[in-house]
Length: 487
Image (cartoon, rainbow, N blue to C red; front, side):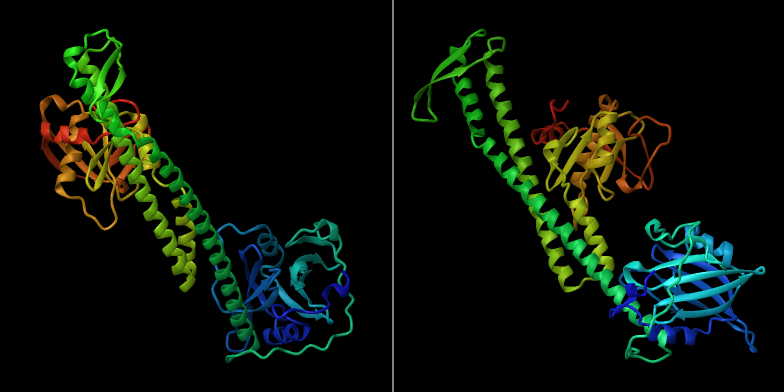
């Protein structure tokens, strides 16, 4: 290693005078190494005991090899101690734990600390280099053979089996010990300084990450809104299907089964002559019903798209509020939550792509999974913990979910709608009544070894319903699915 590599020091690094002051305050020689742990990828902690007339004292020393904040100083903060020690911590424990520090000195002007430890009659040397991007810790034997390094660097020879070439020392530059606010020894003030610097840096990093995630989510939501608004144009002529159905109905007397065309005067458009294509295999009335069905389906499709647009606009507003709030109060925990929620917001619930049947119980949406595959898909990807789950008691049947809405409790009418659908889509339908249990999705537990989608409810409540034909017809009027009509 060349001394020129250590030339200069930044405001975030300790200069040689400061390292000397830290070491003089620590008084490491004679201290016993009781423990070693590595709380993070760029630092390790030496747990020490200094014998003394009053029974001695315990203290900890932090060695940080971060490129931005390399340093050594006493540690008063309690840092995590992983249950499984990383590689370098295990190495130091094997060679240094239980040993006594014989000396701890800085190589002249080099910001390299040499710590000599005697254990079981063998000397080990821990070299700590505080050179910013070249910071490292290397453990050698007394002759300089490398046992291992904190950061293995083959190009520098800093790997097991190599030889460590310590710097020879150079003329000390003119550096001053920085003036630090607060009270206490220099070690304590240095600890506070770097703790503040790292916390501020972490907050800035989290703020940038959260804002970037929110920006991506905002753009994706905007793109989804634009796509859905383009789809609305597909429903511009949905009323025409109803008009064609009315024209056929008014001309039933003029149509026979097997006719392929109906020629009429279009009273919706100034009695202009019009030809309507019929399906010859259908009765005249069924041909009219075919257009009414297309009208209902298109009307439902438009309602779904409009509902999803409203949902996305609400999501967009929430994202923008979060971005504004984080600028005012960038609290680290809130930044982490914001980044996580932003990723979730990129995948809004697409009503048009919902498995199973979708019913409306304003202002709530009810989803019926009719098969094990639909139930499993809904549970995995389409419902959340606060949504509600209904199922007929004692009968095989569909899973019925009610999508929760923020700030709104589930009204009795919606509960009756969901319970009615649970009985209607079960094998107990023929009885005309039944018990239904219900709970929130977060209280469902997957049954091990059971068929796909099987769950075991907890904290469930019971509801008894009688099938009301009027209620079922009302629900069917606003129902939609991915390919078949409600049964």
